[in-house]
Structure formats: structure tokens, C-alpha cells
Image 1: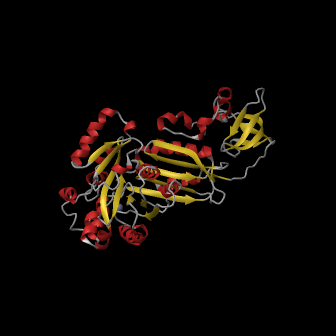
Image 2: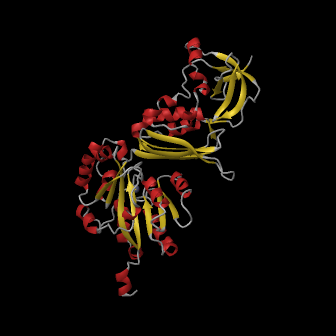
Length: 443
Ligand SMILES: [Zn+2]
């Protein structure tokens, strides 16, 4: 190539590494960039997923159109599948030569240092790609806790590395903290990385052109805090108590059992759950239940419809400290139910309207605490579950109370039965689970 061509434009494809701890808002940022109609840039995306279940790529691929190329690598890009990254870049090059940029979204547990190093130690990569910048997204609410976390000797604190290697730090989710703490957060970030620019934002909304093709990465900054950057291959050792569970299974789940499970999970494991997301197949619903969360902040909604051609499956990923994978797996499996019901419309049955030890359907009492946004919000008082029948509950006190009723609808908003009670008001209640404990035959 001629010297003049070289001078006018670096022929190498710029690469942006998008990093940040679990739940900081990386995928939201990536979607924001991809959906912005104004920048006119064409990207190739390389996504790194923790486990074999790729929930993100499902969410992303629905939003991207044609010309973005998504390569998903399973494993951790900074250690276990680093070789795959090199291979993927080499393989992609001819297809994306005229793209404006590549964005690599790392997992939240990745140390960006070895990923960045890839662009300097491999000759072929160095000739074809240029590291444009490392963008780190931090969650204002959790970042200080993450930075303070004590790790055993030789184990990396990923959050510190992500801040240390950043060219730009997006201080995200500022709406979730008291504004007064922001200067403290920024001072702390500057203490770790004095050269990175910090930008405050919420919902990862930052002008894409200030993040991509900005020629921000300079070796000087990096070699200042990691002098061996260009010499030895950096080997990351992660904290072994932080683990992930990724699972895919068939079958459908009962909405009320699922809500109770989620409520219990958040209450009991909340602080140790760094990140979770999933797509679930709820019995009797035409829509996918998509949930995600960070610590105690959970959100779940029925979003897109299942396509007729699509196989209805459940898939989720949990990442956290000291996860009991078996218990977690078993508790989701326990929510499975049969898609066929024992009773049909018109059947006269007995349904339980007293209060008992179970609390199905009471999750929305805690909604505000946990920011749970689920379907139960749309319920009108009259349609509340049997256990919400305060009058009956009072009558029955702690004893279960069986009331005769007629099945008027199957699979009503995920509830197996809608039942018209045989009382004066002909009140409608839900049979939350298709089992004798809730709805049974008239003897
Ligand atoms: Zn790694």
C-alpha cells in the first residue's frame, strides 16, 4: 500500500471493546448504538457469553437488521476462549473489511487487559485491526461495592481492571443513586484511572459518535499501570466462588409458582446474584416471559409473542457468588406444569378460598421493593386470586375453606382456571395451580 493512502486513512478496522461489570448496562448501550438511525455507521458485533445459553443474542438479534454481524463466543473471552477471538477476527476480516467498526461486548466478568493485548501481540490481527478504545460502563449503585471486594491472592478483581483499562467510563444508572454520591464515585474512578474521561448517563444513553471511532486507546496509558502489557501474555485468574448457571429445558411453567420462586430467589440470594436473565415459556400464554436483573433489582415482562415456527423453550443464566446450581435448577424444574388441564369449562368444582401457608400471587405486595413489573399489575381487585379473598380469609381464619364454583375460563392470564364462585356475588377468582390443593372435584 502507498504511503499516501496510509497517511490519509488507517486501513485497519477500528475495534471498540465494550466492557463493564455484570448488569452495568452494556447490552442496553449496544442496543442504543445499533438502533440510533443518525450515525450511519455499519458495525460488526462480537458478543461474548458466559455459558452455552445465549440469552443476549436472542434479545439483540431481534433488534439488529441485516448488516451487523453477530458472532457469539461461549466461554470467557479473556481466558478460556481467547484463541477463539483471534480466530473469529481473522475469519471475519474479508466479510467486514468495509465496515466502520467492530464492537466486542465482553461478559461482565471479563478482564479487558488480555482482550486488548490480543490486538498487539498477534501480528496478523495487528495488521488488520486497530484497537480504537475501551468503553467501560459502571453501575452507579453497585460500583463502589465491586471495587472494594477483597479477592484472594492472584485472583483478579474484574471491576477494578475494567476501570483501570478504560478509555472512557460511562457512569450509568445515575437515576438510581443520590446525586451527591456521584462526585465520590468519580473521584474513586479517577484514583484508579486518572486518564479516562467519565460521562454520567442513565439507561446507557450516550451519543454513539462519542464512543466509536474516537481513537482513544493509547498504549501510554496502559503501560503506565501495566508495564508488562506488551511483553508477557496476561493470564487472568477469576474468583472461583463466582460461578454461572446456564440452563435450557423444554416444557411450560406455572406462572404463580414461578412468581413465588422469583420472589424467594430475590429475597434469599439477592445480594449474591450479580446478574440473571432468561426467557421462559409460561403455560397458557402466547407471549414469552423475559426477565433480567441485577442483585435485588428484578424486572420481568411478557414481551414478544412466540412465533408459530419457534420451539418453546426455557432458557436462563444466573451469575453469582456461591450459587447452588442444583437447588437453583431444581427450583425452576419444580415450576413445570402440564399444558393440559384436569377440568373443562362448565365443570363444577371446589376451590380453596381460605388462607393457608402458601402465598401464591402475593408477590405484588413486594413489587415496589424489588421493582417487579409483572403481569399481576394489570389485575383488577375483583379478579384477585382466591387467597386474596379477605372476607373469606377472615371467615376461614387459618383453615382452608372450600367453596363450590364453576370453571368459566381456562388459562386466564396464565392461571389454569377462572372460576365463578357459587355465592351471591358470583365472584370470579383464579385457580392458581391445577392441583387438588387448589381446585378439586366435588365429592
Ligand atoms: Zn476470563
